Image 1 (tube, one colour):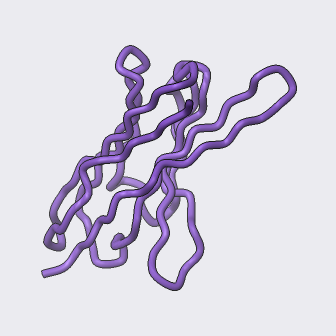
Image 2: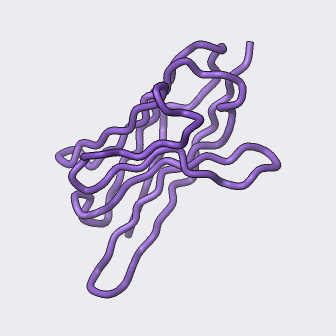
Length: 120
């Protein structure tokens, strides 16, 4: 049974930092591309950052480049999102995503989300 459990969200003041963590189980983590998405009220879910199975060349949304860092620990089945210099526009529910292939079939799983609120 695939599980993605996010943690680390909360309320932070503008300019502050948070680190989100996603603990994965039920699949071969080292063979999955991992991503963080977010969805703000009234908006579509958007890709924030993605990291390949090797951890090299992560991709970021333009709005978070230079502020957010995605990383993964294949030994701990964990993907992290370090968020610095947060601003109110970063307020959203943040979701962890895992994508992998088993044979010719592609699998895509989501966590339950963690709320990040940036406000003074």
